[in-house]
Length: 447
Image (cartoon, rainbow, N blue to C red; front, side, top):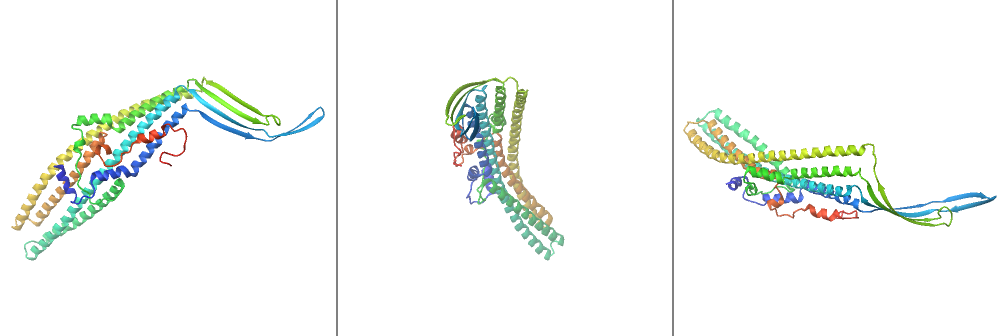
């Protein structure tokens, strides 16, 4: 029934489908691609954290000139030499109060949060794309109705004038018909402007101009069967909730990282130096050392203790944010479910209303021919039929959009779920490419 209803929203030529349009948006939407780039940037926090396990090396060099005059036993000497040297120092962390291991775990939680945010960005892009698609279909159909109404009213004006010329109606009837025709032209201009706006939003979301869009149907087969199932699915799967939970994990690990600053640190340091003209001309020195370093913090002025307390308060805030995310998602699911159910009822009522309005219009026209109805009665009946047709088109559009909105509210609106014919973006690929990189300035894409 829904498929037949939505067929009224588009012409027979179907150069583009909803699936094809959403595939274009998934592959080329600038906002979604920006979110992917942002997620790739977040991936780099993991190798940054892993650097705490790795050695750090630094080289140094120096050169100078020294002139020295001295008097020994009445004899004067003048020495000139060029002290210079090279050195290298390598530091290796052995234990840092578990700060490194907790930093890596926190970085992984941050990456997982970014992936959920990317999944939400994908949902928003697909929902915006489906909405833009249906808006174009709706506004195209409404514009066609407005133009057809102009033709009907123009014929009504002609007939009314003919009847006026033979004395069957008055000048008032002609004026009423002409007024409705003028109003119809204004409605047609507004409908045309609305369509232009929808076409612009379509291009913004999909990336190409809308041409010959085919009918679209609601995605009922992908939706939960009951409201209770929808709420349960959303609580377990919605990216906003999962992102908030990863945020809780990251905040909890931040507490441990900060507490680690109060623990001793153990490290190794190796140095090697080569000096020429060391302290006097023609004197060289080669030196190498290996040291074990232990640092025990005693008191840092209370600054670390303050940051630990601050991190604990932040952890409490993140837990409350997660609770808020759960409730917000639940409210969105209930609202989306209600909207979907309402659109079903509106379509059924709209179809019945159109049938009744068509019968009423035909009856008024026949009664007007025998003088039992006025021209105004005919015009009102025509306007009533036009209004219910426009309302049905709006309901059909809302029906499809509401189904996509409900799927998004439970966290299931994705290219994979919709089975779009497009290469799926996998954020784990870039993560694996950079996670264990020790060196290199180029990104995996070659930038």
